[in-house]
Amino acid sequence: MKKKLNIGLVGYGFMGRTHSNAYRKVGNFFDLKYEPVLKAVCARNEQNAKAFADTWGYQSVETDWRKLVQRDDIDVIDICTPNNTHAEIALAAAAAGKMILCEKPLSMNGPEGLKMVKAIEKAGVPNMVWYNYRRVPAVTMAKQLIDEGRLGRIFHYRAKFLQDWTISADLPQGGQALWRLDIKAAGSGVTGDLLAHCIDTAVWLNGSLEKVSAMTETFIKERTHTLTGKVEKVGIDDACTFMGRFNNGSLATFESTRYARGHKALYTLEINGEHASIAWDLHDLHRLQYFDHRDQSNLRGWRSIHVTDGDHPYMGKWWVPGLQIGYEHTFVHQVADFVEALGKRKPAAPTFRDALETQYVCDSVLKSAKTGRWEKVPKSK
Ligand SMILES: NC(=O)c1ccc[n+]([C@@H]2O[C@H](COP(=O)([O-])OP(=O)(O)OC[C@H]3O[C@@H](n4cnc5c(N)ncnc54)[C@H](O)[C@@H]3O)[C@@H](O)[C@H]2O)c1
Image 1 (tube, rainbow, N blue to C red):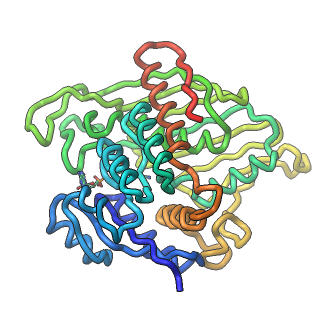
Image 2 (image 1 turned 90 degrees about the horizontal axis):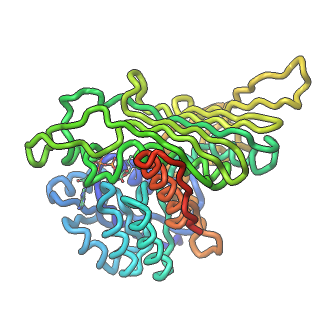
Image 3 (image 1 turned 135 degrees about the horizontal axis):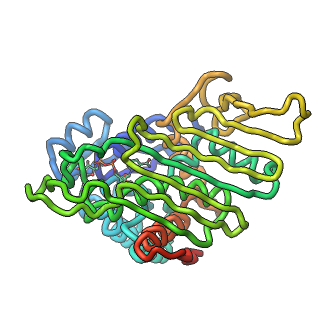
């Protein structure tokens, strides 16, 4: 008989759905000692919360996360709400001794993130942040190849995350659907929303960033605020480009924007080493591009590896070789890894402390864009 892991979900939007789907599926594909149970979903609107609970199979609803956090029958608080709510919920959940899964970015800024890290470490509760792209099998495989030393000395890392959904000046800011455009709810624009993903993957694959030099732009300076009805200043960065230097001496370029017409969620990364290079593209997420200079010279070229075989990361748990999985599965993998690590010495990553490093890089990027200078990234560990 498996032990139950009672989930209390806060927020039922995009991420509320991806996580609920993962909790429901994980036990069918991974043999885990705990079974996630959809115990309660919390949303401010009771009717919406009930409809969500019916759709996904939650046993109960709450309309105030404070009540959810205090419930004895909840083991895990899963935070799927806008960025400005993460800290308050996580601090209360830690005080109540709950395990915490928190959406990214960890916090609104580094100092707030540090407070959260201190609280959960003091409480000694298992914790994790949903930087899910680490668990795309092709990206996990990139990590394995890099850790095996196949690339040799690393020279370059470059990443992009491009979208195009905020180009219209008529788009309002703030409120339920558009909180990402409101600095008070989001903390930053593309830096915390999109580049945070790129930074998390980069630090995981290539180690810590030592310093950064950035520029940001807000192309549309004023937008009507959904909640006040007034035209208000836009405080977020619409686009951000930065250079960086990793501790291992390699050079980085990162770019993100919501103004790249034609791109919806183009996350790409490339890493170039002395012997080999790796490239990956979210729009073709089951493929890993690999070039190895040590190949026989007349056969040398980029290999497009279809990461779907039983000996590829996570793939032995799914269908038969050659058949793909997709975006939703990254969340299933994350739940599986979190549950598997429970009770073990090495927690599933990224922990809150791991995610604090990304927060510090984001802070340094935004600071550099203001000062026009290179900024050192504070140490998080
Ligand atoms: N890991 C990823 O790839 C990824 C992708 C998208 C979003 N996110 C992150 O997930 C979080 C949520 O984003 P989303 O896209 O799901 O947003 P969303 O707007 O789709 O959903 C947010 C939900 O939070 C609810 N909410 C807001 N304040 C609340 C409160 N005080 N109490 C209870 N519920 C509240 C809203 O009603 C809504 O249901 C953000 O931090 C975002 O950065 C991560």
